Image (cartoon, rainbow, N blue to C red; front, side, top):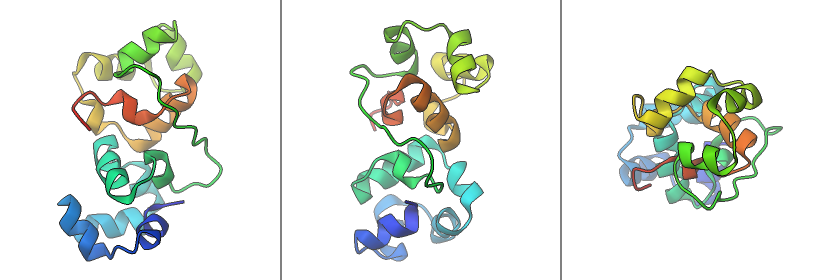
Length: 140
């Protein structure tokens, strides 16, 4: 659906969304108008916006043809979900197209999951059949 449509559906102006989230208006405007910027939005940012707009983070992904399952995995954290599904990092990498070292970095905290790009979260959540917000363990 995209940020602009979700924001308008919620009857929130760009200025109001900026005030509610703390994100500057130029950044939010780019997420609304530049598809690559929206795809590369951090998962933590998408979670904050989705909470305000009462939607799933995958609804913020600009492409209409992508998977938007978003069902809770029942466990929290990328590593826990992967293990719950009985997969190795290598298997998940093969299923998602996300490089195994990147998966390892997110699982070990070398790179915060909140800084995972939305396009990466989409690929992993599709492979794991879960809501990407479940990857976050930082209290989102």
